[in-house]
Image (tube, rainbow, N blue to C red; front, side, top):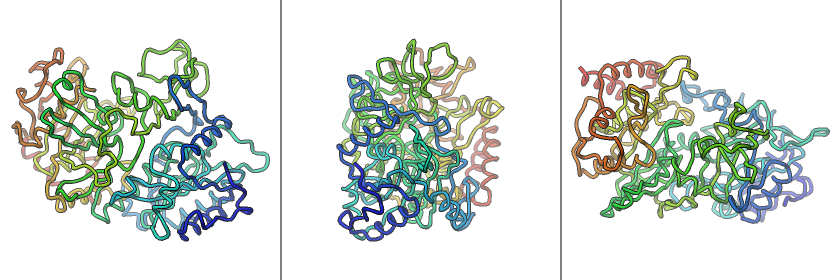
Length: 609
């Protein structure tokens, strides 16, 4: 599968006529010193060969072909299980361009540090050259990149997550620019060093250079640390690029909702982690709704690129072709679409292995009597530790989702009617409300957050702000990012309406007021009807809320008008506390915060007076 050594096999010009690409690969090979170089072609045969190699290395365990055809389980090193935000850097030329919410280091100093780390980092390994494209190859927003990596695990995941291989190399051609991405697990196989199933390094760097459009990642083989087209290119770099070019790169799902009369609306939604984002993206309506003729479709579950389209609306594409979803909590009850999508051709990472070589995780079903847990140890229900890591994942092709939208790969994207923000809030925030206008909606997104537990923060009721769900992913100053949102209103002829939802409000007994999951389609119905001007709303100090008579609650056991009122209640004392809580975040960004958002806070206080 691999070619000869770099000394024996010079890079062949027949692979690509792009001289800048050839020169860069040669320079990085000289730095990293791999034993071999392999140019990824993206074929199914190559994918199978790489998977067989990973099985032979002990990285992959083949799963039961009767239950999960062409699927595998991987177990990472326990030190390499998630994004490492404290080791993620935005190395802009000026520290102020990175802002208060990012880690910054002078770019030349960081380059010197990384050059020393990458020197000889691939000794004894193969350097894989992965040409990739985020977004449909013929889309106006298609972004081309090339990732160099010494991880075959990265190669097989990238095939699922984006367009890659020869077709992308051909599209890059002799002159097209590309984003250079360099990655190493940081474990060279020098003399006397034995390879392991999951190579990595305790010292990690995930580094972005916004001005030169580069990503360097060292030490981790996991998720967004290593699949550099995902969070690194499609969000952190893309936010800086989109700001310069007049579009938006957002941590948002994209979905469609078709009413019984055949009218189809599209919306995007941004939620912090653990707020049901994937469940909403893949939502399949309950029987009550499907019988009435309602349909939902999925365009993307994680990232949206949006730009002013020819229709006058904001258009959106999903730059990915796969799902990298959190496994725990995913089940046939919570997310049947995801369960069908991962039925075959899927890579599971850090979940548990059943005795019949299937997979299991917390929330999937009642626990089996015996498992092999994510660390490779025997597990029983009474052993006192989780079987799957809380951040365990599945990498599955998006095309396998049963309700994938026919236009999910349309290069022109889909027209967006609504933008939805939300968070996990046991009080204060109603089930759904609509912003008064675009600027008010940007304020809602900028102040969204989730209430943390005492175990996480030492105090119940602390709200962790995650503006637009972009706190870890905005590749430049967050205040400037808000200003870019505000400026976009000048470029869009038909602005989408903006809403806020909260599936997690509780009553005095601590029970959820709203059933959630598939029933969330009822909230989406109200949202799209508001966008279409078909129903009135009730004006409150915080925005427009539904009237009970306009909200479909038919078929929800125990959910009457009093329950609805409790889920929608506006309590002034809670909102005064909310404004006070927002101040801490606003102070952190005060010097960069657009004055329009400071005015929105004053207007909110005035409306409550």
